[in-house]
Length: 171
Picture 1: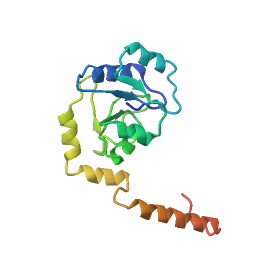
Picture 2: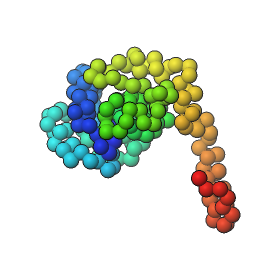
Picture 3: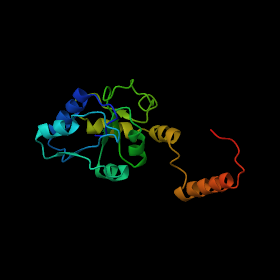
Picture 4: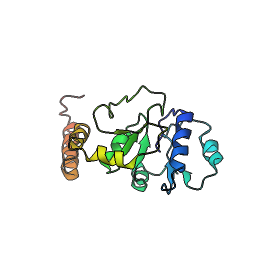
């Protein structure tokens, strides 16, 4: 469960309760945003008294993503990071104080919307990400077809141009 800067405590607690009520969930990793505005987060986690729930130790994002089979978040670009890393992402409405689907991930068919307080429907998530059009939504947001070495070479070439003082357009 990846939190935005300003999570809505009641929604996060609801999500954690639903996840922890499912005996198939072996562990819930709760990753606060680096600029966490929820002062009582640690106290809240402790109040669950649940060994399957733990706070992330501020490991690199990729490490926490690798631990997860499913990523849950609100208005966070971590959902894009999740699907690029091969992890299904679930958007939860009202998880933070931002407007609904601010990045349009749900609208564009990139991210599955989990409607709390319903239990997580693994089959529905699987059907969503198995849709023929889903890879097109991913390509709309991420250049997943380019080779990493090609991207790195392009960035190095652009930096050489900038270093040589021949900078063109800036966006």
